[in-house]
Length: 109
Length: 140
Image 1 (spheres, each protein chain N blue to C red):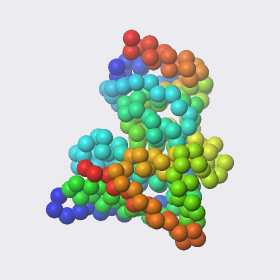
Image 2: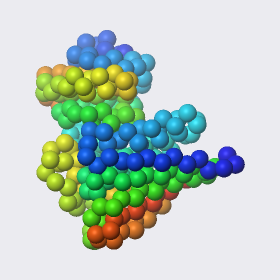
Image 3: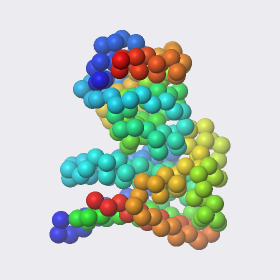
Image 4: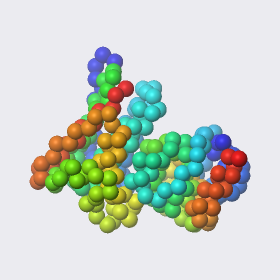
C-alpha cells in the first residue's frame, strides 16, 4: 500500500502531501518520542497525538512514510511549513488513535 | 574512499525545536553517498538521540562525524554537568530530564540505551563538572 492509497481512501484530512508514491509497511501507534525513535518501523504510518516539530524530526530520521495526528490534534503553521520542506506527509483526524490505526489496517486487507 | 570524510557540527543548547538538524544533515549526506538504508537509519537514530541529550542536559556541544571506507564514527562532546553514574544512565527508563522536556515526548530514559542499541560500538567518557564525550561507531 502507498500513501496515495491512504489519500484516495479519504478517511483522514490531508494537510501535507509529501511523496504519495511512498510505500506504507505497517501501522505504528506511539506518543512517546523516545520510544518512537527506538521502535518506529521504516515506511510506517505513524498515528500519534504528539504534534510538534520534534515529531517531524523523529519521523524524518526513522524513515516514517506518513504521520496521522489523531484526536483533532493540529500542527502549528510553522511546523506545517517544516513538514512541507522535509516532504513528510501529514494527515489529521478527529478519530481516537485506535480507530484511526484500525482504519489504516483495514486498507491492508 | 582513500581519505576519511570529516563533518563538524555545533549544537545549540537553547533551542529544542532545532535539535535534529545536524542528524538530518548527516542523513542526507549519507544518502547522497549511496550508503545502505539500514546503516543510514542506524546513524540517524543514534546521532539524533545524542544530539537531543546534548540539548537537554549539556547546553549543546559539538559533534564530529568521520566517515571511512568501512566505518562511521560520531564523536559527541559537551562541557555539561557530566554523568555521575554511567551504569545507571544506561538503564532503560532512568532519566534526569526536566518536566518541560518530558511534555514534548522525550526524556523517558531511552536515549543512551538507544544509542548503544543502534551503534556497533559505544564509549562514554564523562567527568562530573567537566563534561561528557560519547564516541559511537557504526560499521559500513
